[in-house]
Picture 1 (spheres, rainbow, N blue to C red):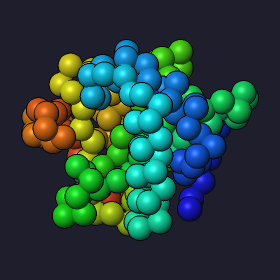
Picture 2 (tube, rainbow, N blue to C red):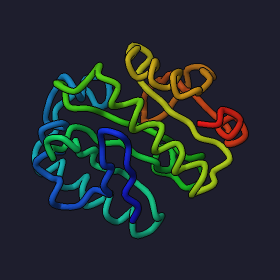
Picture 3 (tube, one colour):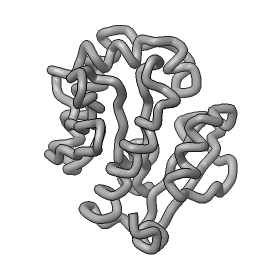
Length: 175
């Protein structure tokens, strides 16, 4: 399992040790507003951890916990996974942050590391990202990453703003 590093974060493959930190994020109704529309229970977060561990074992990638280097706290989470959890779909990049860490560049920092992993290690040809069309903060992270808006598409039983980037576009950026 791959640990990624950025100037301020260590992205660790999610394990049981991250449960309480992740639940602080997933249990916050404001964080989950654009994702599922409701806060998760501790049991739901544990089920997510269990699914993620199985995906790491099966695919060699999935969700990371974003650990702040200065405090050691879990401040976010993000993924490279098959869109809609279906191996027939392209890979997806996604993230969420604890409310007190939003708007400080952590999502962009982690997204760059995860995209590099997807394009340079997994060697995917295409990477997608989706969000609720009203989630302008996530859309801005997608655009800063260099992703192109391709329209509203139906994913996760919702209409989602969909962004994409090819491996060639990533490599041309020289990030």
